[in-house]
Length: 515
Image (cartoon, rainbow, N blue to C red; front, side):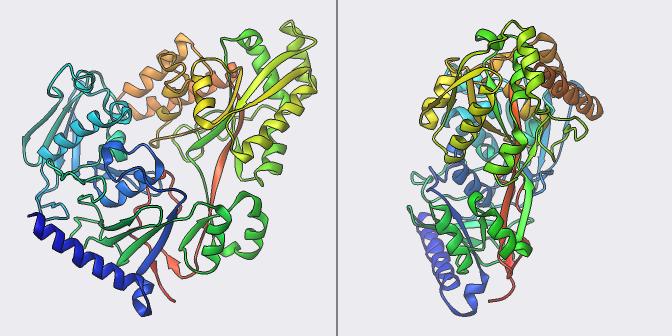
C-alpha cells in the first residue's frame, strides 16, 4: 500500500509540475500565499491560520462552512437530534474514499475526533461538550463514551448538555476526518479526502496541491493550487501586480492607491473579527460602569479608524460582527463626547482622572491606535502609560489580570453569536478563556447559556441580541470597530470570494480564465 501511495504521489507531483510550469498549463494553476509556513498539515494540531486553511483544502468534515459563512452538509449528508437535544446522529455519505483509495467510514470519524483530543487544547475546546471528552483528554479514560459508530455510515454523538452550535463546531479544521491509522509522516505528507490532494511541501517556500477528481461533491475547477510563503506585505503586493499571485490582501498603508488603480479587482467583506480594548472590570476605577462608559465617550474611534486603518472597518456597538446572526445595525456606537466623559468621571468620584496602563502587542497599527487613545484619554484627565510587549507576553499579562487596558482583537472560530459571547463575556472564561475584561454578570451568564442550548432558533436570536445590548450598556470594552477584509483578485481569476471565515474558502470554484 505504501509503495502504491508513493507512486501515486509521484504521479501527482509530475502533473502539478507540468501545471505550474509554462504554456497553457500555467493558466490552470491558482497561486495563493501565506505569510509564514503552516505549523503542520495534521488537523489534530490545527491551531494556526495557515494550517487551518490547508486542512480545509486537503480534508473533509462532517459539516462545512462555505465562503459566505453558511453551514452545509459535508461528509454527513444529514443529521438530527433527539428530543433532549443531547444526542446527534450523523448520516455519512456512502462511497467516500481517502486520496489513497481507502474507504472513509464512521470509524474513521471516531478515531479522528479522539486524535484531536490528544493533539492540542483546541481539540478539547471544540469537543468539550461530548460526553467523556474531558476524561479522555486528561487520560482518565481510554475511550470517549459519547462517540459511537454503530455502522459504516452512522455516527452517534452524545453531549453532556444540549449545544445548538455543535454542527458548526464539526466544521472546524481540528475536527477534520483523517484515516484511522495515519502514517508516521502524516503531518508532512497528509492523506485526506478533501477536494485537493497533497503533492509537495518545500518548507518556507511553497506547497503544491492537485485537484481530487474523485471528490464526492466539490471537484476543483483548476488543476493545481500553489501556495507560496511570502512574509512581507509589500512583496505580496508586488508579486500580485506582476501576475504571480492570484489574490492578495491590500496593505493598509496602500489602501487609497489600490482603490484608485485596482478598483474593479477589489473585494471587501466585514471580517468575523472585532477590535477592542478590554477594560479589566476587577481593577480600581474600572470596576465602575460609569467610568467604563466615560472612556468609551472619550475615545474618537471613528477618527482613529479613518486615519490609522484607512476606514477599513465598521464602528462597533456590540461584539457581534456584521454578517453574523444577531448583529444589530440599529444600535448606535458610543458617541465621541469628551464633555459627557468628564461628567461621568465626576459622578463616579474621579473629577481629576486617574492613571492606567494600556498593554498592547508589537503590531505596527496597534502602536498608532494606542497612541491616539492615549492622547484622547488625556483630554479627560485619564493618564495612560502604554506597555508594549510581544504578542504572547501581552496576552499572558491580560490573562492574569495584570493589565488595566488591553488592546486586542477576537476572531470568531465559527459563524455564530455564541462565538462572540460565551468566550468573551461568560464568567467561566475570565482570563485565559477569552474574557480579558474579567466581566461577570449572573443575568448575562444565564442568557448566554440559554442561547447556546435552546433548539429554538428565534429564541436564540432574541437572547443573543439581548446579551449584546446588556453587555454594551455595562461597557467592559472600549468598543472600536469590526475590521473589513480587503483583497484584490486578478482580472483573469473568476470564482473566488473573500471568505467570511478563514477556512471557508476551499478554492474549488476559482479558476484562471485567460493568460
